[in-house]
Image 1 (spheres, rainbow, N blue to C red):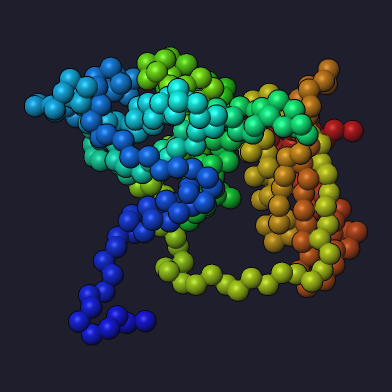
Image 2: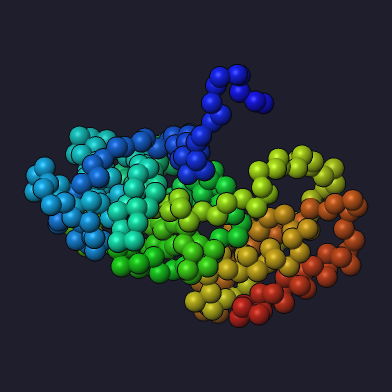
Length: 311
């Protein structure tokens, strides 16, 4: 609809629109927005290899333009924990000042209890890397990123805990996010709270939608009964479950509507991963022959990655 006469058309950029969406999405997920200083101390900036320094700083604690939002959020989380907050969920949208440019970023920090103690569930549960991954994926989805196509990379960088963090990207050269536990040395340097997890979303790396702004097609759920099949594979230790799930999903994108990891088991045989594969028929129900063909394709795709169907 055209604006009334004399009223200028909206001028919000794509970046500004994404930031507005992400503020609403993060708040809807229970995160509180923080606004921290863009200037930090040399000690706080040192782990991130800073590039921008201020010649006439306001104080010694504000000599560097922040190369990461983590120092400010970690300090805010520490203040909240010290004042008795049992669960801290903070996010901030701001700029990182790197050698080549300013980079718009959403960062978040989770600290304390993910779930409080309860007579039904028992002891309180602390936040872990999977909580950070869930937030990162939800925020990326709200930004319009192709979440189903994202790959998980185990090496998130030197400031992240090895084995308890990862990166999300559309390839090793196009990372959209990092998440998990910060490296213990970084938590100590920033005086962050114990059992802290975090994430960074790189807004300028999120690709523009290919639809050219066209409306999404109308959602028309199938009237036919879906089919679920379970597959358990013995996998090599270096094979990521996400990569195996993506391979299974790619076997038949029209028929396979969802792939979910529901079990991980280690035994004398090795590591076993079990997936629930949901098949959604379109115009007619699947025949046994069609289901058998899809099952064989799933097993073949897994075998190409070194996995073996468990008997």
